[in-house]
Amino acid sequence: MIGLMKISPGDTQLELREVELRDPAAGEVVIRVRYAGICGTDIHIRDDHFQSYPPVILGHEYTGTVERLGDGVDATLLGARVVVEPHAAACHVCFLCRGGNPEICASKRSPGWGIHGAFASHVVVPAWLIHRVPDHLADEVAVLAEPMAVTVTALRRGHLAAGDVVLIVGPGPVGLLAALAARASAAAEVVVVGRTDGARLETARQLGFATTTADQAGTFMRARTNGRGADLVLEATGTEAGVAAAFDGVRRRGRITAVGLSGTPSISVRWDFATTRDADLAFAMSSSYEAWEPALTILGLVAEQAATLPTFFALTDWATAFQAVEERTVVKAVIDPTIQQVTRDGQLGSAA
Image (cartoon, rainbow, N blue to C red):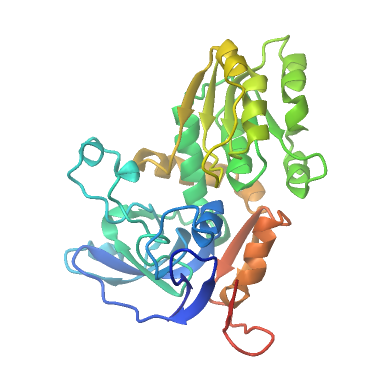
């Protein structure tokens, strides 16, 4: 099979390479990939800003059909439409794994950076990570299950409650999915922060959310809440401006969940000002097991709106897809490995 690979550490080169599809071991399945989403983490992996173990096929957000079973796997999974938690190779013996949190196991090597991922026709994963896709949920929406599970995990870390006023900083895929999830979970109001001239912020408006910019977040939220601010802020950018907007927009004794990665060693925070907010701050990394079924349920509730977020690209057009993510000209770029397409010179080739 052909997969999009990071070949070696220390560079920013990705290449389409021929890779032999291995047989599933006991407890594993082979999944034929239908769609695979490009995550911001994939950009960080390419640029060596997120640990990876090349040569490795990228891609950890995907949906597909179980095509082959290893020994000991439930036979009813054969032919099932599924989505998959990206927690393969968790150690199962550390404090975190034994406590039910393999998603933050320090030893895990997930598809897309530690083991071969889903930017290919097939991926091999442990069967214990699988969730069946409901029949009513189209593949074009099911591919959003992993970022939605990340979102549900983050909102739960922030103790989202019915009637909350919620501020979402960053109208990228996670931010917009978080806005949809918060609204579906009975938030009183959801406001999205972004760039005033950004196409993604316009998408937030089209989805029916009030919007503002980072420099106006605090003023905007206090004006809408009788001077208080947001009960819960989800920061999904990892930028200095985004973090500043989060602290400016939250009410005193409110809650902030940070889910965005910066891709840099550090960022500056107005620490004394942040302290005056007296807010609870949580960080959310990856997705917990108990978030996946609610994520699929919420996607079913917001399927019509969620279906407007992805833009689809052939696997061989991966460079254009990555560029669209970096330039923010799409909300969610999704790779379709079933599309047969070649580059302009007629070769699979590679690009920086």
